[in-house]
Image (cartoon, rainbow, N blue to C red; front, side, top):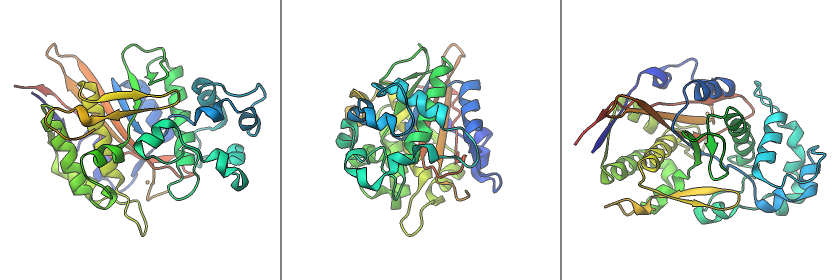
Length: 317
């Protein structure tokens, strides 16, 4: 059995701090490139529907002069070149993709969104998945260009580190928990239980759990982003250890925890941002590997909520 520690030190110190409470997009990217992690689990749409990628008007509307994007790499590269990691973020160049008159075409879902009951990647109301998708792709493209990561399921130059798309809500729904945004304690309990059922023990600092249960970026409707990120972290851990199934489509992917042995499963200030978790563990030979889980909530500011990292240091039986 493996045992991992999730401490309130290092990156997690910002959990207990009052200022600054978050990380800028540039700071987060620098962290991921300076200390590459083996698996990064992101909770935001990795792409848009394939029909839009092949739609010449879709590309032309935002100034792409060379025809349709045709695939994820050109799309993400265009977004990264257009969306600078400034504060505040400027989504103005993408305003055409917010057109009310064209929502029937723009607010379509990928196959993976349908399967996981996710929102359309370009939906720009309520949770504003629109901003999450664009800001997320600005990160993914830069990670790809660094040659330190591959982005699943699209591939990439790295043979060691990868970024995956995760669905905390779908994971918890498979465990029988719905409306989890208002039940963070139960969400965390189930995520820890799923790891335990797979032979992974988590030693979590109680201050981290308290923060994840307490932090709420919502207004009238609860939105516990800390719990979201904790579940994303656990999904990335289980994926790294081979306990979840990867399902891919042409433009997206999801992870199904139903294969867990013994487990019936498948933030600007307050920052509705990126919630980040990082796990490090040392193998028997003394080397280090990393796993990160991110739940994203973005606004027009480039300071992202970065609640916690995990640093694990032991194997056990």
